[in-house]
Amino acid sequence: MSFSINGKTAIVTGAANGIGLAIARQFADRGANVMCADMDEKKLANEWGDQGEDSNLRYFAGDLRQRLTIANLVSATIDAFERVDILVNASRQVMSTDALNVEDTSVAVLLEQNLMTSLHLTQQVAKRMIKQGADQPEGQLGTIINLSSIASRSTHPELMGYSVASAALEQMTRSMALALAPERIRVNAVAFGSVMSASLKSSVVENSDWREDIRNHTPLGRIAGPAELTEAVQFLAAESSGFMTGEIITVDGGRSLLDAVAAPAH
View 1 (tube, helix red, strand yellow):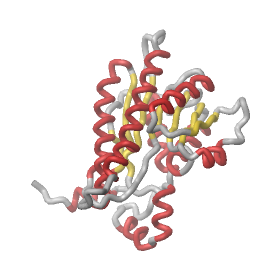
View 2: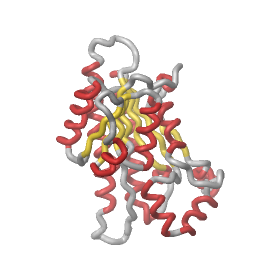
View 3: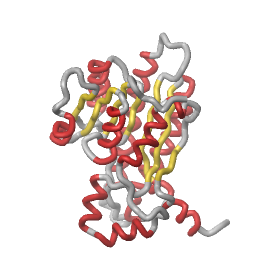
């Protein structure tokens, strides 16, 4: 099986910085057509605005929490590249939760941003994949990759909203994998540990003790760079993973293994 994504068309959300940006760059470098989507139009323009008309890159700015924006993103991708083969839901938000504060809205905010946006975009893109595959009797019609977190499996009250949204995203991945398997569309996810995304970078700059704590709790002893996730995402996008669906691949430097060792056996 081939790891190639050359000639495929991908939508990558959260593509203005951090992990989404790294994925979009790798996909483009490997020959894919890439529609880079994000809410931050200024950052998108700074990263992708100098592309020529014959480029394999385009960008789309908008609030993907709005269904009309999602429809417009898919339409813009079809206008630019005529089809869509890969969706990477890399847009996500991280915020803390005050678990005992009845006024705290973080759980609802993160479910909306990290779960519902990915679900609605998955549904819209899947419809397009099915439509464009009507005359393709065999083979894969498309692949969808969600970005999750190992927070889905650990318990930290201050990250309750992020953990709940991540766990929900992983369950959505499994459910959509079953729903779309008859349509020859695969749905998988990558759950990662501490990766130097834009949000984490700003946090560890302010708190060097936090950086050391992350390193001390990661068996490989460091924080991953965004590019270290891209190979795993490309694997799930390519034919090399053609018999995988509903899987959650963990990329965390062994951090979740420590949580498993620390947990009492029952």
